[in-house]
Image (tube, rainbow over all chains, first blue to last red; front, side):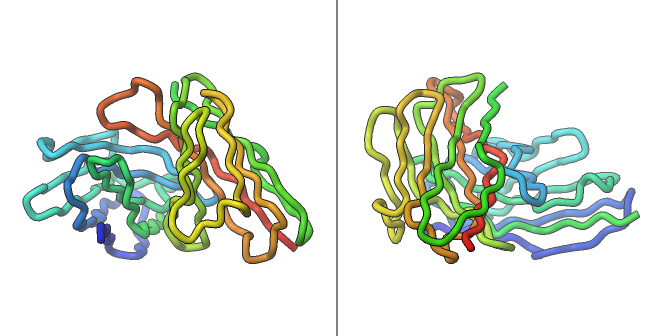
Length: 111
Length: 118
């Protein structure tokens, strides 16, 4: 069964600090991995998409990494802002385009 | 670009009534639309996949007679929750894939609809 595991489940950081979220997956055959940001009561918004051959991709203060050999990905948030408070979801796509969703990491940024 | 809207954003209804949720791709044609359900503190769960002009494909455990999906055009899909009950209360999110889109086959998500059944 294709699975996507995220850690930690939640974290609290102070404004201006950095944090890193983890994602491990067993989806096969792998097509691409996406990170989404979901604000409370809103739909997910894409942050990054990476294919097998990409190791890192940035979107502003968000940097995602991918190790396709170990099937691990991380999302690094630099210089966090209050608006970064949200749930971050790791989503892995197989070649049949079915998406496997992680449970998400809830990030709370405090002033 | 690639904006998906949903209407209504929030709906409260009495048990036994039917509720229709619309999903529209505003600036692109979507050959495929997806409907998800999300319970509090849980991730999105795919309910069904719909292609324009054909019947929707439902995931295992999702009742097709209860959750009616219509994808009548390349920009509109509707989800009707029939005879809604309190256990149907959830956050319903649609997404759309762009016709002839990137190799990522990226899905663009709508803002979601909060359904509360009393």
